[in-house]
Length: 401
Image (cartoon, rainbow, N blue to C red; front, side):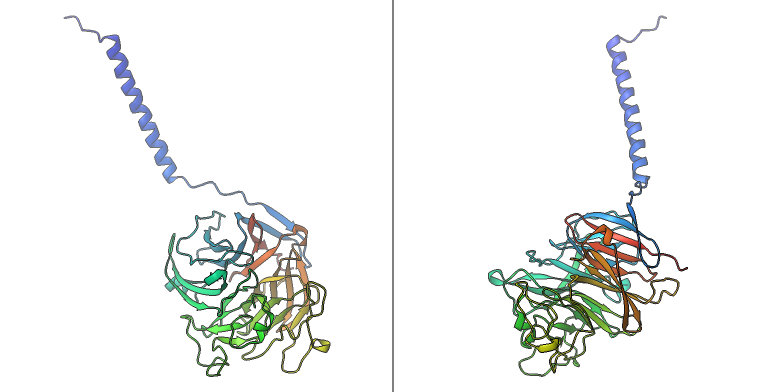
């Protein structure tokens, strides 16, 4: 019996089906490989810069952040970063930047206002709670510093609650502060600015120009210095401040340190104590931007007002503060780091106990505005640059000699 040969058209159809099946199998293999493959590590640019204690390697962990304002170090080696326009992002240890995390409170992002500080709750490992400070919009174009707590999820915040609002809200785009820090007792300190309403810093019925101290839920500690005093806000810890953008608690002693912008000159560090008046604008080492004198006090001192613990006659424009302590293997042990915006540097102050004994300015050759600085428990230093194309940097410190 003679076999019947397929017609040419039929043979072409069979071959076409076979080709389609082969291509589909190939695509399935590629998809499976892509699903299991690890992304190629990001190339991280590094710079070598000089310091008094040896060469420092500055690694660009992440770039492309829009005016980043604060960084919090996550236990998994990643980071939370705020961008002043109102975005909160995760940054991986490899520099990968997430989409904006949903659920951030409404932010008034004008002038110096926006999304500002971020810190982890002391019990973050179990609670996943974080705290944000930000400029909050008010009626008729007004705004004021506010603080919210929230639970951090993979892509969104939940249980968002505003626990503090600066009152009264005022018009104007500048001097919101703000940094957050927990003390050893679990009290939350909130630094602020005086919103360029100078005498508000001296008025105890207003919250502008005050360092405030609240509990983690926003309630007022019973031992705050102005609790029960008529005409004074119970949240106030200290007053007479200008624009505080640096705040940290010394891990060695539990002492609260803050630094604030002077006007034209007169940036200062204080160790604020309960109920004390730190002078602004009655006492200052700076002058008005017009060149006119601000301080009415001769000799830059006045009875009943605290003198700065440390002062710069020429303003470096301080923002961000972190202690580098309990690292005996490092030549930079017992240091205090501060970011400097106008100076384009990272300031390192050498400490002998609480005494400041020397100053060094790092990263000057890179000339980046340093907005924030944080130190990890294992002694790594992380820095944010305040630029349209802002960077998260890691400083690999020189080894001990």
